[in-house]
Image (cartoon, rainbow, N blue to C red; front, side):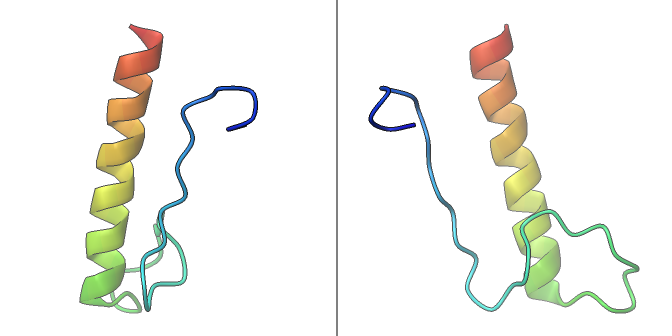
Length: 52
């Protein structure tokens, strides 16, 4: 995608298995919740910037 001139980023959340984590809160960690919140905010900002 970068070679095609697209805006692309890879975000790695250390110690977290996934950025979008909708599992039961009893099995998630605080880091999981922070990563989920951050990834949701980043996705929403990307959609606003590219779809408005």
